[in-house]
Every structure is written in C-alpha cells, then in structure tokens.
Image (cartoon, rainbow, N blue to C red):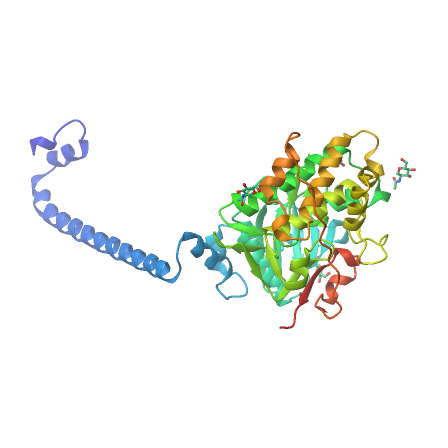
Length: 425
Ligand SMILES: *[C@@H]1O[C@H](CO)[C@@H](O)[C@H](O)[C@H]1NC(C)=O
Ligand SMILES: *[C@@H]1O[C@H](CO)[C@@H](O)[C@H](O)[C@H]1NC(C)=O
Ligand SMILES: *[C@@H]1O[C@H](CO)[C@@H](O)[C@H](O)[C@H]1NC(C)=O
Ligand SMILES: CC(=O)N[C@H]1CO[C@H](CO)[C@@H](O)[C@@H]1O
C-alpha cells in the first residue's frame, strides 16, 4: 500500500486513514461493483464496435468507395423528403416555421425578393438580427420537393466563396423552406438586362464577376469533393453580395457524377432556353461541357447586356450567339459591347472575353474548353486563346413536350423560365 501513498494520490491516502472496519466491508463490494461495471462497459464497447464494422462492411459491399457511398446518400435513397435522421446527418440547422413567419413579417409582399421556379424568396430578419433570404416552396409538387431535397443535400456539403451558402431549412407539415445567406445586390440579371433601373456595371466589375463565376464553376466541376454539373446556370442564378462578389445559386437541378464519369443522358431535360447546349436540349446529354456552354452564353450576355434569346431576335436561328459570331467573323466584335459600360474599358480585354465566350459555346462538346482552361484564359492576359469554331444553336424542336407547370409562368418572361422537356423514347 505504501506504493500508493504519494502526494499525488490524496484520495487513497484519506481512505487509508479512515476506519479499517468500514474498509473491510466496503472494499470487496466496491471492487466487485467496479469490476462488474467495467466488464459491462467493455462488453458494450465491443458490441458497438463490432456493429460499426459490420455496417461499414455492408456499405462497402454495396458500393465501391467513399465517393460512391456519398453519392448514394446524396441522391439515390428513394425517399422523397429528407427525414429527421437525414437532416441530422447533414448537420444543417432546422428552423421552426413560426420563427420564419416572424422573420418575414408573415411572408409579406414587402419582404418578397423574387419569384423562382419553385416558389417565392423573401427577405427575413432572424431574432438575433441576422438578415437572411428564405425560399418558400409554393405548392406541393413532387418536383419541387425533389429539387429541394437535392439542393439541401448537395449545397450543404459545398463551401466556396462563389457559391451561395445554405444556412438551414424548415420542413413542417406542408411547408418546405430553405434559408440562405442574404445577398445585398440581388442577382446579375438585374444589372445587365434591366436597363431602366439604372443599375449599371462598369467593365472592371463585369470582368471580376465573370472570373468569380468561373471559379465557382471550376470548384463544382473538379475542385470540390464531388464532380457536380449545375445544369441551370443563368444570369438570374448568379447572386451578388454587398461587394459585388458573384455567387452561384439554385442547385435544384444539379447532378453529381462519379469520379470517372464524364457525361450522362436524361430523358427529362431541365434547364433554361438560351442557356442549354444543343446536345443537352436535343438529346438530354449533359456533362461539365454543357455547363461550359451556359457559362459562355453568360459571358456574352455580360459583355453585351443582351439576353441570348431576347425579344430583339425574331427568328430562333438568330440569337445573341448568332449575332456575336457574325460580328466576330466580320472583325466588328466591339460593336457588341453594352453601351451602359461606358467608354472606359480595355478593348483587348473585351475582345478576349468575347473570344472565350465563343469558345465555350462551340457546337461540338469536345471543342469547348474545360473550366480550368477558361479561368486561365480569363485571368491571364498573356494566355494564347485559340480560334473559336461555329457556335451551337439551340433550335426548339416542334415535337418536344414542355412540362413547365402553370405556377411558374405568371411572373416571369418566357426565357427566364426553367423548363423541363420530356423526350419520348
Ligand atoms: C399569416 O398569413 C396567413 C395567410 O395570409 C394567415 O392565415 C395567418 O393567420 C397569418 N398569421 C399571422 C401570425 O399573422
Ligand atoms: C436613369 O438615369 C437617367 C439619366 O442618367 C435618368 O434620366 C432616369 O430618370 C433614370 N431612371 C431611373 C429609373 O432612375
Ligand atoms: C482541362 O483542359 C486542359 C487543356 O485543354 C487539360 O490539360 C486539362 O487536363 C483539363 N483538365 C481536366 C480536369 O480535364
Ligand atoms: C453596384 C452596387 O449597386 N453596389 C451596391 C451593393 O450593395 C451595397 C450594400 O447594400 C451597396 O453599398 C452598393 O452600392
């Protein structure tokens, strides 16, 4: 016992000094209780670990690697609404509906920021004073729920300064809402298309916005843990924070690819007219290169201040891409530049951007550069840009069935609608 009576063990010292009668009875009992507890604990530990190993073995047997398992979790579990357990696993804060009612003044019109394909977006102020944007799904359509689920699962796992962050969500009874960080300067389309609002952007800001979008897209395509195809890149999905940093939003249509997967085919084409690459719009083929096409359209829209499929283009053959291509061929590409940019811009930079835009919208998938190449071309003055080939047009097929539902149509112009086309097989 002397071994233990050091200064460091006052407890043991004290018990030694205590009555020896007590010790005789208490000690064996305490020891056996202790031993029993220890044994039980060890058994439980052993059981839990064994269970875990079994579970992970099962998961490995079912799928191949951690990436595949993540995809499984993200997309293919078959349930419609993310349930409580799934939400817990996402570590995404759940908000009470009542909190959001207060934050948005009962979803008043004064708080309404905009109308998207699947519902309205409101400005809200949380109890702590934090300003947020709240997307409320308008009706219970299966599609809407599917998109919400997709978005929640996907974006909760992504973090990049050029992607909008989701702060939480709310799923209560028939209400489904997503809470995002608030973007002071709304969306890019307000700045480049809505001239009457006098929200002009100079060339430097436009160039920075293009670079920011390219970085966000590059992250989605190859730098995040997943390979993600956004599938609905457009001006109204680019939000701008108080410093005019662009953030890609709306991941409702996004798809995750496996590490060695390069393209996929879908029967249900979703996207926006004017931004869809021909191979996607016609045949449902999508890949990172279909996002690159959309990015190219966006670049040309930012430079010109015109929509690709605007009312100024009468025939579907002649859109912004057609106009740009013609001007480019005639050496008059500078005529494309948005007048509201003003006189202060570098002609060289503008011409480079137009050329990059044209490279992105080339008809053949394999001719289009990838996003790392695009970013390199955009951001370094000296990089050699190759000559673009003929751009790909999307000519609307007569026999495609449009599935855009009535809830989307009322508040938006036709080329802003996110459409779905079902191809008969
Ligand atoms: C909020 O608005 C809805 C419908 O507009 C109404 O039924 C409800 O009573 C309102 N709630 C509060 C707390 O004002
Ligand atoms: C926009 O600016 C022009 C001149 O700069 C002015 O005449 C016009 O009233 C402004 N429009 C709005 C909506 O502020
Ligand atoms: C992107 O394109 C460049 C040049 O075309 C190529 O060297 C690079 O490997 C590509 N990157 C990826 C991730 O495919
Ligand atoms: C260009 C532009 O309108 N920028 C505005 C973005 O938002 C901040 C904060 O609201 C304003 O101060 C900027 O003027």
